[in-house]
Length: 507
Image (cartoon, rainbow, N blue to C red; front, side, top):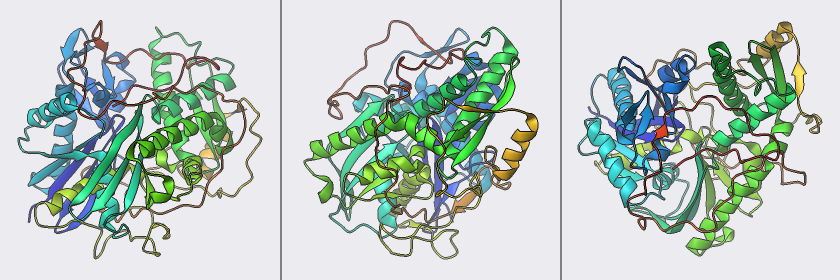
């Protein structure tokens, strides 16, 4: 019996899901996690690496790494790496081919069908270029749908949303924040109004906030490194990766430790959830503004919504759920919201081949929440997923937020902190092989209201949110920039307090 494959080529993260015999599960693409970074490494010898392999090689060749490829799809100018131009569809095709290879190896055959997702705000030019991606990867007849439609398809597959219900999808991705209002129907979801989108407001900007926090805690020792020093440049790349892991850990833990191993300093910085929430408060407010704009465009109020579905890696941030709940409707968030789009796309694709995809099924690793609706209890963590939970409960008292940062000195302290965290920074999936499929319901649940917005001066300013987005399909060919885009600029110092915004470019 064949299977269907769904792939979400996100700006910062790539995920996939498999549907077979009516059951849907996530595909394990990474060495330790189901998702892989959307990174492409082009070696001088012509070898192309993507995902975890590219990330591992990034420290040794930072000038040959391309990140955020999908955000550049609307730009006709090729990416310049090592003096050679590389069209963006070609780079994304490398990512897609590697996903097909990994999943095909695990499943023992190529998929019968392939479904791909893209942002709802894309116009005809981006969609045409996206078609080049799957054709270059050897797929002539890929099915394509928007990310919010896929997310709603996943929510609907759990039986928690009645026909005719209004759902707002608030996608907190790595490169942008997007919000879309949809009406659920038997034939699928219909987009209402103009989706809200804020490129540069994604979770990758939060990684920069954490990086800047570490630099301030060390009195600028990180930004003072010599970019011409290969050892220092590699250490900064690793530090940025550890800042990402620290941010993710604070979604479940109340504090975490960030190791710093530079030629000039070897130490560790302690970061608490309270400190992070204070630093990102402006970002949280800006994301809610994007959601409000989408609601106005659709002509609905929060009271009209069945739920607000949070997707994307930053959906795990407790303060985010609290801010959305402040609108008057409890948000729904899956156990692993970064997989909601891929899982929904797999279910959607199955329905179009006559085999409706269920989230889970007999023998599935995860079950929907017990209440049978958005307010139900959460399911268990998917097997094979990275990241454990430390013993520190979420109810622990938040440490003083007024500190610039606390430095934990001594290797011994770092080892103890890592051991106590149970894989706090380097949790693994227990050896789940790349390409393995983890069947899961991934049922969204509604958390209790998180920390409400409070006063306090922002530590780092956030990118401005545009007043009104362009209507989907209204924009034609994008104007070319003055010069080709570099593949990967050298590591740059973090923004100083009061400086420029921290966002990255995104779709």
